[in-house]
Image (tube, rainbow, N blue to C red; front, side, top):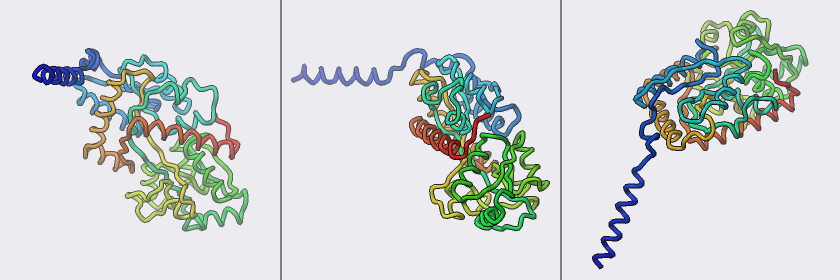
Length: 326
């Protein structure tokens, strides 16, 4: 009996010891700076948020991080660089839902979202607001739909460019409402908002943080937000789903952290854990709230499912609208 008890105790001790062991490279991580690749240009709102995340991550890892911007081609250049990076945990990347639009529309990409990445966590979600020029004679989204149907092909909408989230989401709205309106693409978000301010376009979808100053000045008016729930900064503005009676309508903006596929699982798990802790701080949540965004930590599996779902969704919208990527 004594021998059996001793044997069981020895097995338990061995199991506990092995459970606490980690490979030497995982225990030492990080031994050098971690690079955060950004598929956005320096100085943008997303870039500012990414730099904050990089600094907080360095603090928690006890090492250092640096941001490398690889903007261009709607983010394709930077995402392609992430896919080709060495999967050792020293390169991670910040992507947006724009990546799923590219994946759903093009076959010539330098990356494959399904095969080339390990998913770490969703970072944040944001919303778009449907706004109209101030002298357009409508006060609600149903009134805009009615006006567009009464004047088929005469109203127009602006976007930051072809195949942007704003473009695809507006085409989804057209499909859901039967509006016949013309697309006026611009060379970026600033130009698109200027078009709405000066009256050269009738309406458009705008990221809420970009629209707020213009809404407060009265130069444009908000009719609806594109998320499934109302937004705290525009609590009196209904969702598109509410306004048109389409409960499944949703078109948000999101940002996430990925790494090259085959990153060591222990390092990937640690990055997920540390980023979740960062997103749970009041400081980061308040900074996001100032930009009309919400922290949205997720499991890697939840992020992968979101990427796959959005890829299918926007591919379908592009086919229905006959949109060809730039």
